[in-house]
Image 1 (tube, helix red, strand yellow):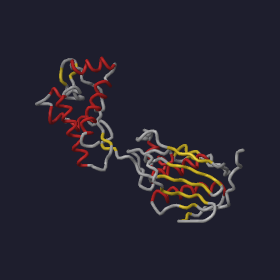
Image 2 (cartoon, rainbow, N blue to C red):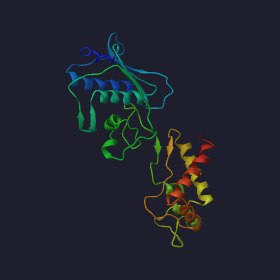
Image 3 (spheres, rainbow, N blue to C red):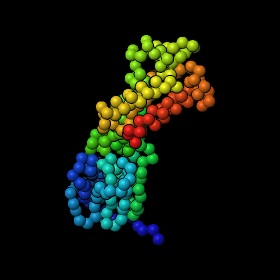
Image 4 (cartoon, helix red, strand yellow):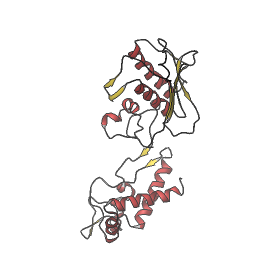
Length: 275
């Protein structure tokens, strides 16, 4: 037989560790709960009886994952990471019927009902980003459980993935102004001519691959805090159509053929030093 709804005491306390993310999550829970039941919910370091408790637990799960539990003793949000507590808080609010639709638009029901349950959520993707300007605001990004590198997410909101040089990096890795005069073969051949302006890289050239690997390794050494590095085409067309590049792209079915092979080759070589 299914248990009945949990008896929520008026203004039940929220217990949270004194860390930036835990207190941010607790503050958001308190803010929304007061709108739901009309009573303040104090944030404490500990409490007895029914409470909403946030805690860190070493589960070994991915960053941003969390476990939600609810029974007659209270409601629990646990995670092994700061982001997990923030994400868990918003997931719990969604289970209570809240919806976060835009930076200035959220739906908060006037009732508070929950049945006993336990569930775990693990992010399916390491990178969780929306290319929507409003979703780059840290307040809204946290509600959507994103970790966008281009957002303003701060430590209290769970932080963000460290993504260096977000996109369009070919010219940083193999600069036209440095290499074209002596090595035009490093760049796109278009209609039989190596192109200086609005060019890409010749992605089947082994020297180009070596330079790209050297560049990524330099970035990692200079910026050890970053975990993702962008190896990406320049912000225009003109892919290389030399015989070697054309053969790969024809085999794969599009110009993505040389691009994906090249990026994978860079990754394989970088992995030797940074698994």
